Length: 158
Image 1: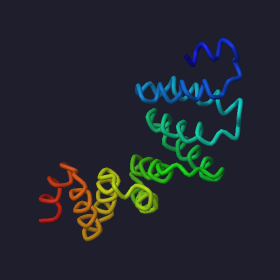
Image 2: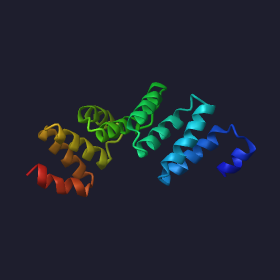
Image 3: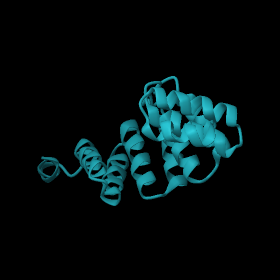
Image 4: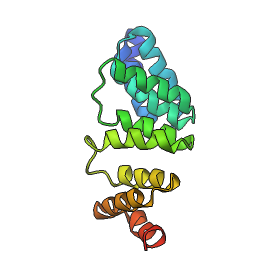
């Protein structure tokens, strides 16, 4: 459908955005980013395209580019609940656990029911050798159903 829409109008930013999201779900990050970049080229104020492009760049392991794009989306007024979590994951991927903690902590307000958030936050604290906070967040992740957190509680928080 998106390709047909583009045959009718090559400047249809919504079609490029839709294709970018579809490719992201298929984990075809290069095709996703190419389509999202075109959507943004057509409409530089398309906040949602920036948000999804940040995820595609993360998938390509372009963590600095992903952070720059999601930061741009935040500056443009993004209300996506994943906005800080994406930055946290990027910092975590770069082993910058101090900044990962800052971003994951901001995410707790929006993603309080997500065990993966608390698991990543726990690991970040543990890497910073803050075992009290790390174990606290492992407990929260376990309470939300994370099997990995349950296993890791026995390792890090006996």
